[in-house]
Length: 174
Image (cartoon, rainbow, N blue to C red; front, top):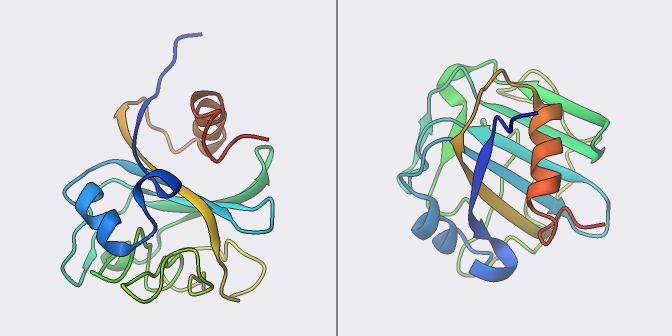
């Protein structure tokens, strides 16, 4: 089977840092990115797809194609598509990769890195809640990939399968 996806790892928290400054320095102006987040002290993976560019300035990015997801294993996942297209992506200098108006927010400034318990998920701009609670959580590691080649039909199962074989040394390791 021909690989329909090609991913380029552009940021790994454990390698590049866990602050919003690091995120924006590396990821601003990058299009078609997938963010994958390993929740600390759990098997939980969270993430999202951003088809538009990341920005430092405080603004919402508009998109009808963005989605967020969560899973504990690659066969049992929650996929949540954007409902409020005008609030698909949450750009802010103190945020890392963040989706919706609070649906998946990764917060970190000079006093708080993403590793601290200041990140959260609520159901506001996307169709489903991707975590069982809105409690704040900490990040063990996270990665941002730019999609270089794809045949895109929002099939998250295919994307997860390809990424787990692509990034064995990253947060996907067992």
